Image (cartoon, rainbow, N blue to C red; front, top):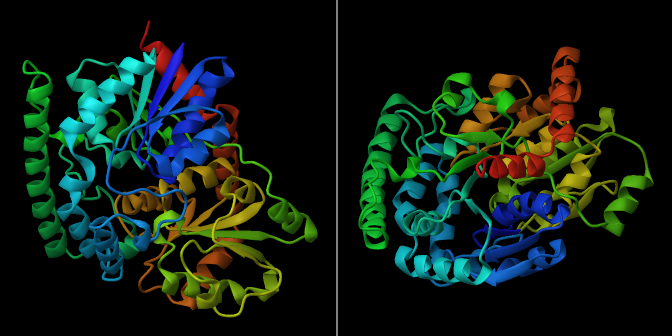
Length: 438
């Protein structure tokens, strides 16, 4: 058998997808990954074949920098980063305005490329990133069965009366004013309608007999795979999902890192892991406040592993000699030893921390990070602060609370971790895909 994995040329998307593909490889089957050239090293590291497929203008091999992006994409990135400094609603407004170009990029050209890849690879199974709308349109419009993988929080797929781009839930510290929410809803509804019209026009070209969509953001593949723990998803929302499986987390195995291994073995003490992912690490002002908060936790003698991404370490203030600070760090390895994670709330970070049984301090900036943070807050497995207003004192106080969890909360977190590691996401994904054949 052959599995075809279709992914945008972004490490944060490709890593969980190729991790799911490992279940097919472990069964002795062929895995082919269709993605762009920037993430070729990741595909090679997993030992998979790669077919060239460009699904958007931008790319990100691990740390994104605006100056490395093609013309136009660099300005869009700078605009997005500037919007995050203004708050949640301005950021979501900015993202909504850019959505058509970002998510349904050159759909007919991409469709021809996807058709070429499918003819060449002749896959038995296909899994595709839910946000690769052009690729999913091509698969649907040409009758290729596929599994649709929602890598973000499940709210990345709208259900019921939800509107894509408008979080269905908010953490307490970030809930916008009613007027701002109403303005955001109107903007997102307009984007939804325009996006759906574009989807339907392209779909009619690919398959003149296809039924038009009422909401292209709600469209899914033959089976829906959600990279998220079902235990944290509201039952009333689960009931609205089409055929689906919750994967829990796509936790990957990382190669040895001698520097990190030496740091982990150098001395004892609780470890706090800090990362804002490949995009939001550009917010050096927030990282600096987090660093200041953690520097003052002297009584707890924490050691900090901090992935600075595109931020210069010089922007963080004095770095204690016991800290490990690098542009990129092996997240899964460090979460395996951490007692607290400080994050932007990206779904990879959240689910990997939960799989490791690590509580989270979340500072969400954009997209589904708000709904994901609200879910964690509701479950009592973390705390959420506003990245633009949280002071070092507030950050320190939250960290202290999370470093001394209530035993009942710690027990719930441990049980969730055991469930996620006992039944890994890759195995759940393959079982769900194979079940569609029966």
